Amino acid sequence: MSSPTAFFWRTATDRTLDDLLQDAATPEFLRAPLRRWMTWQERNATSVAQALRAAQLAPAWAANLVVLDAQVGDEAQSQPYAQALRRPRAWAWLAVPGPLPPHAADWVARAPTDDPIVYAAAALRVDAAGRLTHLRLALTGVSARPVFVPAGLEDFLGRPADEDTWRAIAQAVAEAVRPKDDFRGSAAYRRAMAEVLTRRALQAARVPASA
Figure 1 (tube, one colour):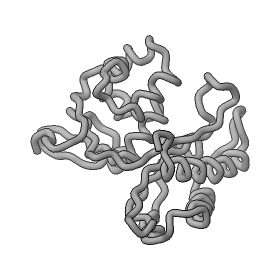
Figure 2 (cartoon, rainbow, N blue to C red):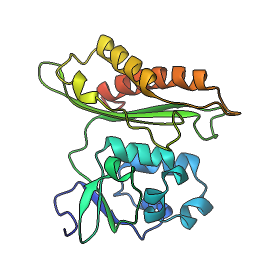
Figure 3 (tube, rainbow, N blue to C red):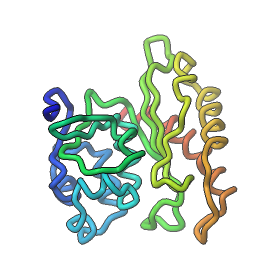
Figure 4 (spheres, rainbow, N blue to C red):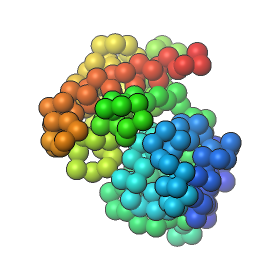
C-alpha cells in the first residue's frame, strides 16, 4: 500500500523527534511530550522509526499517537499504531487522520520535570445528544508494556458523556491495568493513579482548554 493521501498530518519516519518538535505542522499534542520529557540531545539521537519501534523511548508521545488513531505503514501495508505496538517493526511513514477528536492527557510525576510515573491520554467524540460516539485511551507506567491500551472501550459508546460515565470508564481501566512496584511507586499507587488520571483526561477532553 502506498503512503496515505487523506490524512490530517503525516511524516516520513527517517526524521528525528527533534525535527517533529521544530515543525509547526506537527500536532501540538505530539510535540508537547517531546518538549517536556526529552532533551534536545535525546530528540536528535532518536528517529521517528526508532521511537515507533521502541515505545519506551518516548512513551507519552506513543500514548498520544494511539489515542489520535495514528497509522503506520510502508509500501506493502499499513495498520493502526495501537496494533503495531504488539509486534514492533520498522515503518516508512506515520500519519494521523483528521479532523482530530477532542483530546487531553494528565499525569503524575515526582517533580514537574521528571518523567511521568503514570500518564493517561484520552480522545473522544460526543454526538448532539451528548452521548459518546468515539473513545480512545492509552496509559503508561501501568503494565510491563511501555503503553497500555485498554480493551473493551466500545462497551461505553452510547453512554452519556458525564461524570458517571467517566467514573465507570476509569474504574474499568484501574481493574484492567497490571502495574508493578518500583522505586518510583508501588503497584497499588499506580493503579490508583490510573483511575484518577483516566477520569481527569476524559474530563479535560470533554471540555478542552480552548473551549
